Amino acid sequence: MSSNGGRTTEAPTDGTASGRSAAAIRADYRSSFDELNRRLGTTKLDRHVRFFNFGYVPLPGEPALGPTLSRAFPNPDSAQLLFQLVADAAPDLRDALVVEVGSGRGGNLGVLHDLLQVRAGVGVDLTFASVAFASRAIRSGAGFAQGDAERLPVASGVADAAINIESAGCYPDIELFFREVARILRPGGWFLYADLINHGVLPAYRRVLAALGFELVTDRDITANVLASRERRADRERLALGEAGPDALAEWVGQGGSVLHGALGDGAWAYQILRLRRTDAPTHDDADRLFSADEQSTIHANSSFWADVLHLDPQS
Image (cartoon, rainbow, N blue to C red; front, side, top):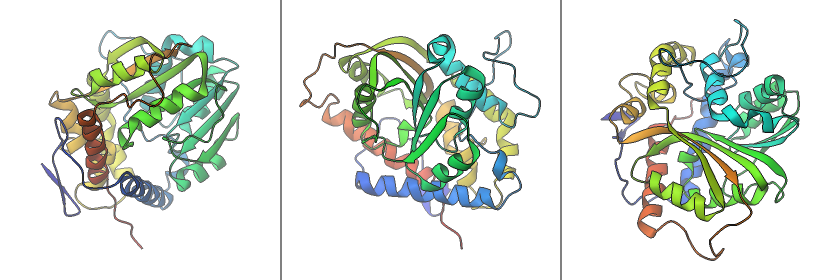
């Protein structure tokens, strides 16, 4: 149990109906990300922070993936999460057009271009402050635009791959996002997806993605690796973000004792990698909703819950 700026929060196990509209939830996320960017802008580390993900640490005996990073690279665990997600899809990304939804401060697209030879990247993010930073900081092979994941400003069938890392759990109607990914990908394109997902809805995610024409290639629980990253880096990252209320920034970095850390550690939630390929044979009628009403209620409620957990009050 945690109290965040007067909002009492406890990680849900199955979700309950949320009274907030989807628009209100999105506005809350946008405001909190704007405030996080503002706070970073007051620190000496601002120009070095390109990632907002929890990272990945290989467990004993497990090799790291991807190219060797320089010792000066500021976010190695976050880059390793990207390398683990891409994995055997990496050869197909060379000379590819990659769309990242929830692109944040641009770190993933920068690494994909500079180290994995991706031809071009398009980053879409809800938060203008993140888009503005990424546009300044990532100058090679990528462009960034503000947009809604549930209504992507991308033409149909143009992308060779779509990436989403630690973002889709914020979407009040994730089915619309999955449909948008299916729309923008060419047949054979990759959907590379990593997120904190409630075990109760994970089977429904798999079912809906299959109905949308995705073939599941990899389905992997990396919770232990993500928790190892938080044990190694969360305290340092929390200090780098400056002052806030007693819980708000601890949640952003998944510090020990936070709701986010507890959600991963208690077994009700998993940090999951889903690596999928787009086929040309969806099995659904476009008019049909693929999540049941109860499943959609849970997804909406969980999105609202995490908006509360991550809420940052703007400071003057």
